[in-house]
Length: 114
Image (tube, rainbow, N blue to C red; front, side, top):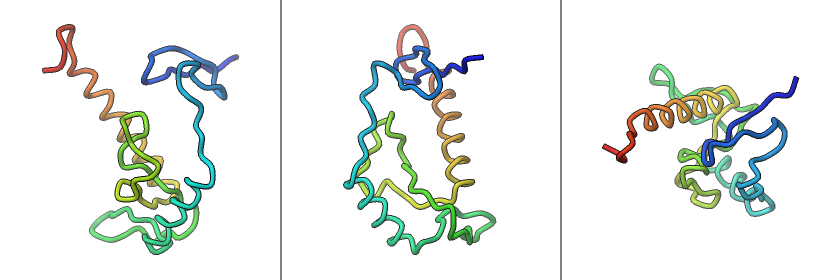
């Protein structure tokens, strides 16, 4: 069975493991790696998520996350809009961002945004 995905920007279907034919390929080279490394150092090699008033103690499975999704205009170079998260908190952030995007699209109507 082939798993299909839908491009949120172009609203077309494509096979999982491939990319939307209308989206440019993700080009992340040394520039991104250096930026991500600076963000991790800035954040003290620890997840920056706050839960119950305390910072997440995770120092492993760290990933650099975009506070503004790239599809929504987020940048790989604006370090003020990047943060260090453990894998679990990164997944939670992406899930929340997708939910917000769906909520915004529910708010649209045929005549444009309210």
